[in-house]
Image 1: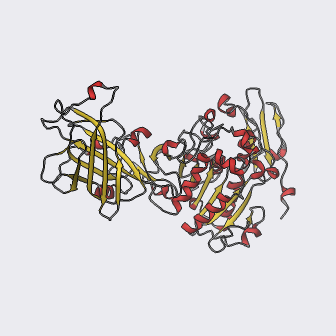
Image 2 (image 1 turned 180 degrees about the vertical axis):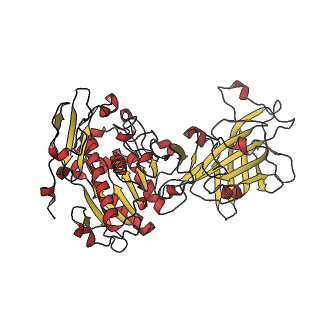
Image 3 (image 1 turned 90 degrees about the vertical axis):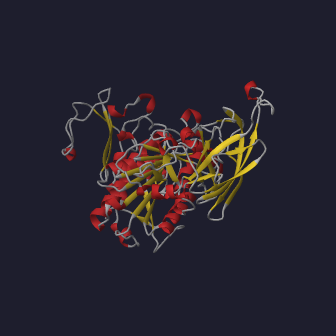
Amino acid sequence: MASRAVMTVMAVVVAVSEAATIPAWRYAKPLSLPKTKTGEVQEWCDDVLGCLYLDETWELGALRPVNQLPDSREKIGTTFMLHTRANPAIYEDIVISADDPSTIDATTFDPSKPTKIVTHGFIDTGYLKWLRQLSEALLEYGDYNVIRVDWGGGSLPMYSSACANIRVVGLEMARLVNFLADNYGLDRGNVHLAGHSLGSHASGYAGEKIEGLGRITGMDPAGPYFTGTPNFVRLDPTDAVFVDAIHTDADTILLLGYGTEQPMGNLDFYPNSGHDQPGCDPVNIGIDMIDDIGDGIRELAACSHARSYEFFKDSLYKPCPYLAHECFDYDSFELGRCASCSDDNTKCAYMGIRAEEYVAKERENVKLYLDTGKDAPYCLYHYQVIVDTASPKEAEDWVQGHLDVTLYGDNGEIIENLRLTGEHERFEHGQPKYFMFKSTTDLSRVIRVVAEWHYDDTLTNIGSYCWMLLCNRALYVRSIQIAPMDYYPQTAFLDHSRVLCKVNSDYLEIKSGDTANLDYDESCVFSVSNREATLTP
């Protein structure tokens, strides 16, 4: 087979006027090319990959201030490296190429097995530690062909150049997948592309050229030059049968965010709101300066951006479910208003490798939320707590203070001295009060709650002063429902939810400074309906 140098034509920029003559070798292409606002079309062509164009549809003003054609195929240097369980080669580079089938024949590639293709983004290469670790974790999780992509020759130095070069990377990935399908029997529906940052959009470009591609995962899809653009410019739900995205650095570039808040998949996950991630200190370094500093500082500067692939890798080790919930917004989720998966299980999905288990893949741009910790393993367990307050005649209309609880699970686990409320939390007697807390501890079913109530006054609210002889500082509770939110499907969620009360009493009086026990019993009354307990987007 001829070498790449012989087979590849250097990329060129050609100004094609409306009246230009079409060369004979391009008779198969339309004779009337789309025009830019200046009446010209820019063209990049390669003997192997075909042609790419810049026309007026790419002129997007401030959304994409610099548009240019890609560098040459040789300069970008897209390279594919194979890992399998038969030959993990985590610290080796076993290169395969559609240009030379013998490189594939000499490996342990098995077309009958699922194939995962992982791709880096701006200023990175395919030889970084995180890509090797992710490849290794994928092999531990499943018997896959894992293909690691390097396009480091095109990821530097300018961001605008890298944005152009991923169009070529997408063509390269599509060519490899289609070659493996046509010549080795690989099922395109069994292929999963997972890209970080610009690699997300490169995967989208590839998906446009792979009919029936099974899945794309965008790990914090890049925002600058892509947010708000048409579907053909960026990752979108039509690029594969199923597209999921994990958003971890959604601030605008003006706030030094490298990702995007715009939903781009069938499912879009927003851990910790999708913005600054726990454990990531903000560093004031602009996107065009990152290539000038050391790797350690670069990782710190892009910490939130990098958490997307850390979360995906974490999901492969299954430390906990990473179950996310659909909600109106993150604030509503944090208030505990979106705990249910609904009877048809469409309101919850797993973030990470198990996202493809979602039951309604035809939906698009479904926004789901969850929280994580600051250190690996990052996943947390979420609990919805609803305090069903009572309103006996001796109770004040409202009280304010803080409520601490110790929780006992039926699996022997305990969460001690948890501050459930904020400071000066107001409880309206006779109305439910919602909370959501997170923990590294799985309690399974909560069977006992020890609650401690402290009334407090605030100088800024004169009406909050409550003198012992003039008003009642006690909190009155009919029952408390605690629902572990990470049990799925909905039947498991309901099975693990528990209502606790003072057994054989209509309500419980907790005086300020006192503690009280609430226990699980089937006789406990909970007056909040399921409809009230969960907001439905």
